[in-house]
Length: 271
Ligand code: PCA
Image 1 (cartoon, protein in one colour):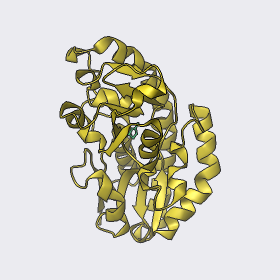
Image 2: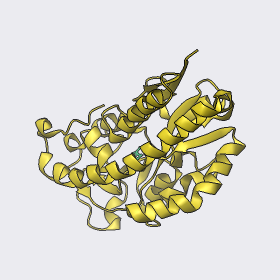
Image 3: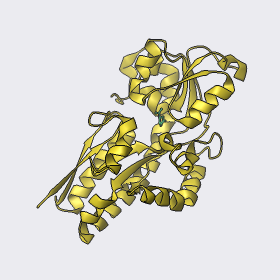
Image 4: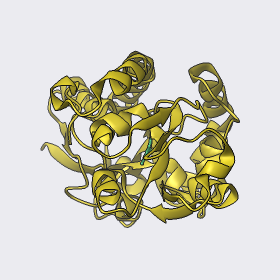
């Protein structure tokens, strides 16, 4: 009998990382001849970002995708890739991932979880309503943070951090809850940031990762053939999405430079 796995994720379907999840699901279905069907629920529609890891851990869903750095308080290794300026391009990010993979797997195993693959986000830059030319300009600015590292960074810069899910960025900027943030061009384009903030600075501060994470009990219920198929699909998807990150990233800066308020220039990455 066919098994169906619901897979929640927090980011919008048009995002290249969400597209990777869809491609992964399709590949799994193909490789298992339909024995395992993964149904991706993007945009926080099944579980909000903050609830996804717990839902997988408790077996409410067998699989989920979650931004890893958001869980650095539970295990520091989850936030290794959000340390500013530790790894600032794809090659360095890959090296850091390879070196930390063992620890990451161990921290997840302790929680009854298993990492299938880790898509990488584009390099992080600074978005702001007002121009920023020196660190003092950040003083008193409301800053949208997404994990402990960005919260701490805001504090050290004298900004006022508020944690917000990526899907709520547009709302946070439009209601004045946020005036600045550090994120990838992918997030800026997805949330049409040009409607709220005119200034974007390429900082290449770090390249964080998300994780496609499976509940170990659900994993063990799969027969060996299916496990192999899923592992192979995951490896294929991981390689593809790391390549795609660079393709996508090349377009964000020119796009954000020219788009200003003209929505028709949106490159199709909507929620
Ligand atoms: N920004 C995320 C996580 C990855 C990224 O680039 C966020 O802003 O929530």
